[in-house]
Length: 430
Ligand code: UD1
Ligand code: CA
Image 1 (spheres, rainbow, N blue to C red):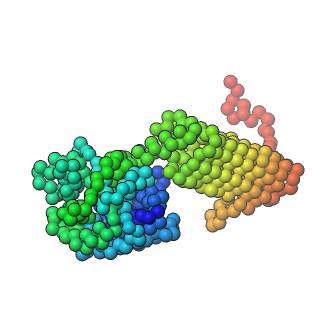
Image 2 (tube, rainbow, N blue to C red; image 1 turned 120 degrees about the horizontal axis):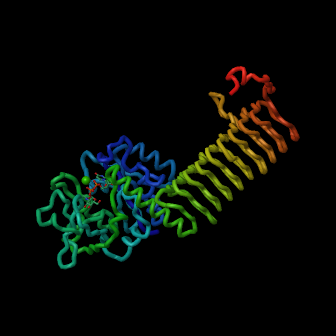
Image 3 (cartoon, rainbow, N blue to C red; image 1 turned 30 degrees about the vertical axis):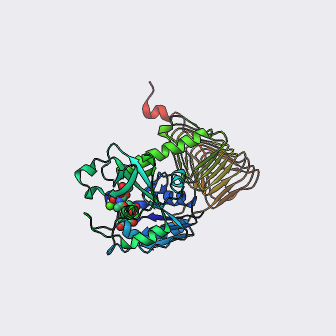
């Protein structure tokens, strides 16, 4: 891995109209910047992120997830622009790949293609029917001459449809030589990284254009772009898992987080949402169920089941309107309308309709443990902390507040009484 990566993320991203920094907006459960870092990590052991706007917040977020990223704070006051961003950045290797923090769709393969060969600069190029907003690439006799930013284009240059996609692989010696001497004599009074192309060409360095896919190199600048990027990434994620054998009914209605994974034969029905780093193994997730950061194995959920973070369902059936949170259920049936939170339920136990683990007293959360072969009757409340051992029967409608013993029937009900002929006295007889 003899290449360095520099990710530019100092821009303000005003068009996002958000207090959250642009690069921290998420696509398929992961921030745009993390998508870029993850692609870079596959290529390099020397990654520098250039920051300025909300630098602290972004750096803190990165450090929560990655141990070995370098940071460089751009002197935006004195050196605004993509060229300014690279001033003072130290790269370890002889080549550096420079990319933008707002390109979540770029793949490792596409980046890898840019690092090939021995040109002084490899630059990414796309041809667009509508090149508006991009730097135009001036090519003469098949050779790149310069990049002209749209705001600096003369009318004839505006017609050029070959544009700079914004990713470059540059030899360190080229950066060391040209970055310090870029000027800001342009329409935006910014230091353009793109100026190194012209400087290199003038000194007969080799500049090699690499044609890339528009979809991968699309920058996200607005909420509209964000939604569009989400659609593209979702399509990719679902295509990948379907190729791996996951059955999806109406895949366009399904959402799958980029960190989720599947094994064995899985079936996802329409409207299912798989969030976080969930692992789904040989399971059937039915219509409109939501799974968050959980492990589901050899189980079925829904329709309209909800499995919240840190749950583990093994050999288990969860039916409609059942909510499970931070609980481990092994060999359990919970068919209807229940809340199971902060609980462990063991093999052969049945959770009747409407059962609730009362895990919260308004201040603290408490644990419920249910052993094997426990029958929890419908509409029971299990007030935690609670320990129900194996082989217990809890009668319907019971409020359980005390631990039970194996073999018990647990029952708390006011005894039933009947008042003869009350109905007829009250409503009369037909
Ligand atoms: C840039 C290119 C343009 C190219 C386009 C492709 C320049 C001068 N222009 O334009 O030729 O077609 O990308 O998307 O480079 N950034 C900093 N510090 C700054 C300014 C920007 O770190 O002072 C970062 C931004 O956070 C962003 C990236 O650099 O991640 C690109 O900046 P942006 O302003 O979006 O560049 P464009 O004007 O789109
Ligand atoms: Ca700009």
